[in-house]
Length: 267
Image (cartoon, rainbow, N blue to C red; front, side):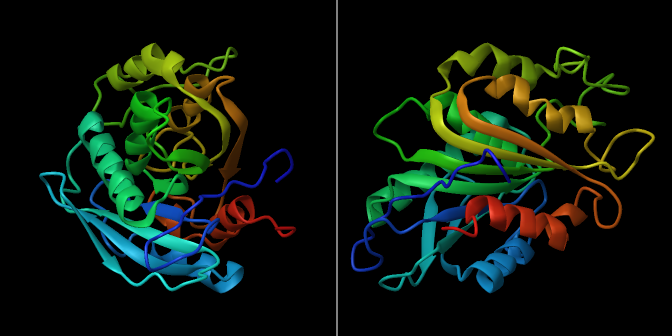
């Protein structure tokens, strides 16, 4: 994991955690739910002495309900994020829901910085939140971001004529979905100079270069949006067992890579 620095979330929850407590959010994808990210969170708890403290549930109208117990001096608290409407493909809508979660954590627990691990469509929420809000000094700042199976440049079956697609020598995907073109148009707004990014994707279908649902060209397209706006960026390609789209979040090798990125052994 060379070239990737430690990211923290500074939190001072009222009647709960102490100053400088690292906080990491886990966000599911399309049709996901409360159990979708549990394998990754369990790995963090077992290997990195992390603890799930809060679940942030977002209603279809955007209202956020925070439940759980955040004990004093929790070293590495984890926050599970659940969107009750898990079927929408409206990127601006889900990014506004993520904003509501962060504002709720900020108001109740004085969270000022955060890490996030997102799977599949959850990555659209993260990217468009940052495109719209990363320069706002009044909102929590993203320190570390793990993207898993991200659909940054379209979803087969949802965007016409996406197949075939590939990454060109200049790094850009040959075909660009409308939301991806929107992201490229907004990337000048990004303020992520302190953010480290790990982009994980599975090459399960080696002929199509796909995880079985999302083309690798779509997942890899994140780099072009971020450009030189981030502190560091690294992509990891996984092949073989459990590299299909939904299986990536259950893959112990992926979990290990996520944990090592978030909490390097020297921390």
